[in-house]
Amino acid sequence: MQPLPNNGNNMFNVCLMYKISLVSETNIDAQNIGGGISFLHFNSYYLTGILSVDSDGISRTNNSILGFTDINYHVNWIRDVLNKHFTGKSCVLPTVEGVIYSYEGSDDILSHGTLINRKLTVIENCEVGYHKAYTYSFRYCLGRGRWLFNFEKLCFKMCPPLESESLDIKCSHNGKYANCSNLSIPDTIATPSCKPTYISPRGQDEVPFELHCQSNGTWNKQLYSCNPYCGRAYNIQNQVLIENGDKALVGTAPWNVGIYKFKKIDTIYDLMCGGSLIAQNLVISAAHCFWKIGMLSNSRIINDGLYKIAVGKYDRNFSVIDNDFTQIMNVEIVYPKEGYNGPTGFHADDIAIIVLQNRVSFSNGVAPVCIDWNGNYNVSNGVQGKIVSWGKTKTGISSPILLEASLPYMDRSSCRNMYTNGFEAYVTDDKFCAGSALGQEVDKGSGAGLCFLHSNFYYLTGVASIKDPSTNNSIAAYTDVKYHIQWIRGLYNKHNYI
Image 1: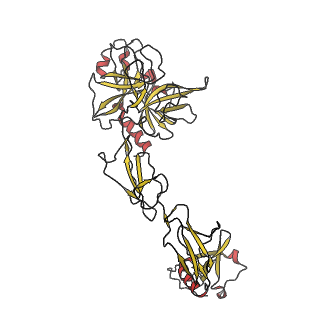
Image 2: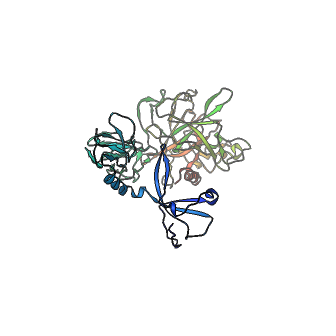
Image 3: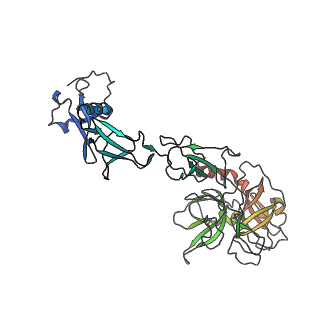
């Protein structure tokens, strides 16, 4: 047995370590050099290594380290010798990535390296995940290791499916339609573009962009993602929200959500509040929707199915799935704003963020409202804002479908000056008002978002909080989103990994 110098630079292709206790009855000496080690694959033993050296002369430990020459490393050389001296009347099936062999008329798979007798035909096919470039491919053994075959390259690795929530992806191969949601064959061309509810990540018109499926089974470029449009109203034809007022179409406020609470007595989910979608997994609503007297924690982990969030929903009835884009989501965490203390605190800090267990899918009927993160926009008194809810109609009955109303903005100072009955105390520092003293009372629904149009997009400006119960006009106090923007930003960043 050849001892190797102990220089620390020896590289073994295959190494096995035996504990002395496991080989105490086996003596390995020079006579074992050249012995083969085989491993079991698919019920057959394959020669994997040839014993070459051991650890004698390298180190004196309780372990015996044996070095093996790797057969796989020399397989082409072995094949050449085998063909020259052994396969006089036969051929060896070559190892080709992605190719599977079988005899003509048989479904039994032949292993790579199998000896095939002269004058026999082997059919070639491709493994799953590989594209077969030709309909029929064969190998005919001429003997002495020589093959007659009709194609040099048969199987090409396919590219993985292209899928994206934010992109429409059109694919073609040789000018014909191809489905990129499946594996794609080489030379497939994919052309992505932002879906109607998304915008290019560059914030400008999209530059033509193509991906090419390469012969190695990879796309030549990375697929990008588009950012969802926020605050965009979509008019989906022939679906009316309200019949006894101005005609409003489905999609007028795709960020609106319904918050439902389970009633054990009736074993149903009943609408309790509204809210506004600001991300695929975040909703802004009012803290009083979730608050209880004596509540100590600033967050509530919900895992009992007490609350459900309905997005893209227009029928008040929870059991009605009224659109293809309607989604019912579970609640994971509710964050009422720190410091909210109900009526005792005059409903200051009446705002909450709800984290959904899963992310919603955006569409024309489900999309986020914009947030003025940098304070770029201000609203002047009298400017009309949009609000939707399942509140009461002008006749005083609860609406079975979503209602829409336009309300004029009123700053905090102007609102407080209207009251002398004590309600002015509820118009706290983080409030403004909206509505008209001359307008008939229309219930807006707690937690619903009041949005104003800036640069053709709607921005969430206020959250419906409280109304003076002694009046019958349309004025109500709204929690000012801008006042709480840093708190909102912190939770947004925490749960959206940005």
